[in-house]
Length: 358
Image (cartoon, rainbow, N blue to C red; front, side, top):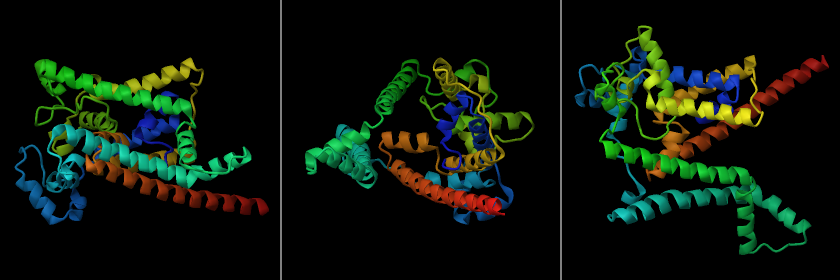
């Protein structure tokens, strides 16, 4: 994300604003995923034999070669053996209400988020806030002043804070409405509807297609390229990712696909309304980082089972302990990415200065 200047979802809305570099990022993410989930050959030598045995023992449909693909053996032989644990379960809360609101919401979301905000305040914001108070003749920093400083940091960009609040409410309502429609009409996956309409191409061995009922990012991007590869002759429906779980339906009838396309279109509309839409061409260097960073995001999203939306925000909101572990990984990766870019920039500047001196 640091290399490309944004995440997968950020690249989508920047593409809607006319950013060509962001379009390259989306393409790189999509291609790298579609290839990574179906590779085998020499990469199988990297897989522990215990993963291979466990994957084969799962008894998957004959069309799925679980023992002949790096990603398949990783999923069926390792990931599926790991328990999904919520904070309510960790705390041993048996009452569903307490498990949801005390375990998953309070302990799993509110407290960690509050601690992160507090850390950001103490490490980066507080010194500037104290200097500002001293200029105003206010020197003492009691609890009330500290809370005022924390709130000042949160509301430093009021427009962003309000937008984030409404976005969260809208996302929650979206999930609620989509689940309600699934229950009302008894259609829990779009694959059922495709069958009833006589559309069988691209449906997985389980009779499903990727249809979470709410917005994800990277899976539908992988499906775009996976569908194109299949039409070009690549047999890529023999793996778990496409062939068993998500399918590769025609992009024109892919429900998750249209959510991402709508985001691109919405960003374009808002940019046009504010006279901010502009084709922003790329450069060779930006294109290089877009392709490299996009490929790393594509591979990482498959290893982490999602991007920052699916593997972090969605899992955290569901009380899944692994969500915050993904967040820790993002923070560590961002730190290393910034360090690398600082080194790269200093190196380039040193070369340019040396050339000027000559």
